[in-house]
Amino acid sequence: MNNLLQKLRFIASEITLGSLIAILSVFTAVASYQGSMADSEQSTHNVMGQQRLTNANAEYLTANQLIVYDYQLYDSWYTNENEQKAAYYLENFSQELRNRIDANATDIFDDTYYEAMYANANALFADAQTLFEKAQEWNRRGDALQLVMLITAVGLAFAAWASLLKEESKMRLLFAALSIGMFVYGLVAYLSVPAVSG
View (cartoon, rainbow, N blue to C red):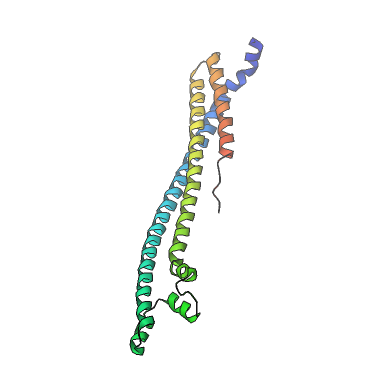
């Protein structure tokens, strides 16, 4: 047992502990920096998503108003026998309604009409959804990097405590081993951090 402890003493040497403290300090700083950048990207994508969502809602409400207006104008145009008044109503139709009339559609207010009227709103809703999904990806990356930072900080603490103990102390050897274990665990966790698509 004593022979085994003597052989393992090198992991608690000043060089090993000094190297661990340096490596874990840099590792913690890198994980912290990358985690902050991920949090920043998450916030940016969330704000952009909220902007798109606000614009999409405004476009949706505008489209609703235009549809109601089209219905009113169409009824007046369809039932009006005065050509001059009918022309006035026709000129004020939305482009989408005119397209349906020009296409001689059987049902003027069909799915094609509604899809065209809501096209801008739907495109903005889709953009907002994409941005929120991207924000979630950055959030997952940031959370994973926070875990890496926690692991490496604990490993750094073990190495620091080990360096304060006497060389013949069994606790020094234990803390050094725990520090190395945390370094390996941190490295595995770092390599498992999810990337952000695109």
